[in-house]
Image 1 (spheres, rainbow, N blue to C red):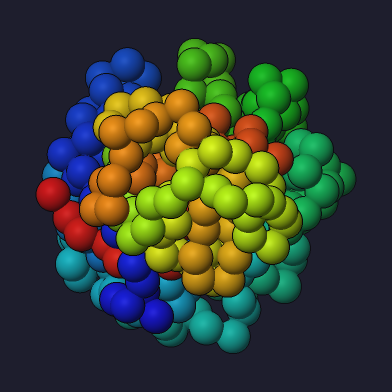
Image 2 (cartoon, rainbow, N blue to C red):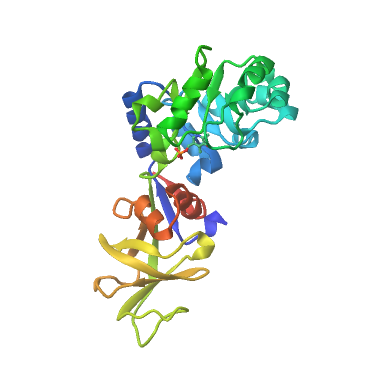
Length: 310
Ligand SMILES: *Cc1c(COP(=O)(O)O)cnc(C)c1O
């Protein structure tokens, strides 16, 4: 599907590396880039290849994501599978250099040889263990490292408190807590921060016309509009765009075609490039228009487009 998409994504791998280096020099702790979900649609293989000299290790969600791209052998780096550990697959964790994350005694005991990491519940209440089971799980898995999926400093503080006195390696911070030194602990696990400014998504106008009445399925009103190929099949929704550096609006999205209002922009012509995500159309603005997260914009739009690497 991706190769036939009329929506083109240029992925600036150098920006991902620059961002990773900046995070590392600011935090001075281990950097474990999260490349789950095909690196949020940007491509787990090229992203990991690019980051292998900056990263201390990589995070995926499932063991299979790591096996699919032979992540450990390709990068020479250790890997953590953040999703629920599978007690039946110890041999595969070991063979592929992937450490499981565990949150109960069964998982911890079955995966003990794979150096499991304890996931402590500090508020997310998902794939993580309650405070009163921490001791038993640590003992079952001879565990020396603990993490939590933190969204607030309070979550980080809870992790520290619940594991204090055990001299464990600890990590908690994803993108949302990167600006909070108290959240850095021994390692950070950013995903979104690495990717949100590294992509430019575009399409080209295939028609430009004056309107003769209400236009499209929704009957939107304008004086002049453009059409490009690509629609909700390609993950697109209505929202901001630019043409020739000027803000325009994607006013209607169909299955595989979309409409742009051109009233304010007389220079637009057939062949003009419509930027749907990029320096002048930041992912946060698109996410706001779509009423969703930046992560969702990236996986929806970039993940289904025709990707090129620069
Ligand atoms: C996805 C994920 C991250 C990265 O989140 P971002 O907000 O994209 O930085 C970090 N830790 C865990 C456990 C995750 O599931």
